[in-house]
Image (cartoon, rainbow, N blue to C red; front, side, top):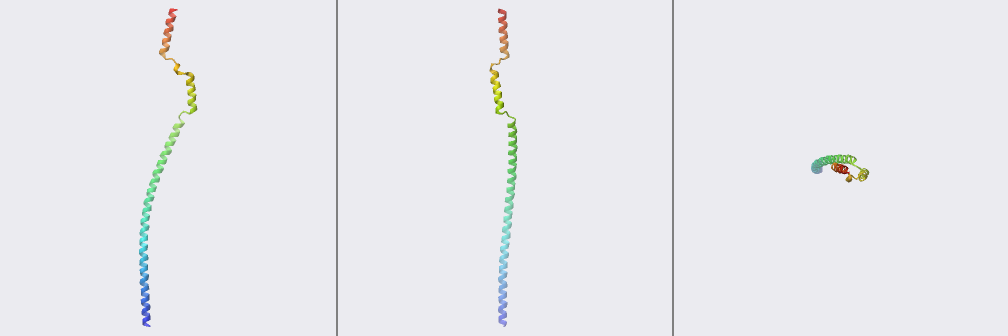
Length: 120
């Protein structure tokens, strides 16, 4: 009977050692997984910060583009339209400024008329 109890004691002892080994292996694996998770978390946090920085930069660029477009639209609103230019073109062609006289031309005509008036 004592042999059987000793056998049971050895069997229990070997099972406890086997369970301790499995426990140690699981603990080591859990530590490795934990370290990998921490490393991945740090990497993800760094990438997230980089993305946030890029997003802020893109938002700034978009704001600048919007301001530029607003400025262009306001400038375009203050420029003449086709119809306005066509109206001016019609008036200029009607008045024909190339046929206008300068002050010197008028003075010459007056002098000529004055000389013709003396001769008559």
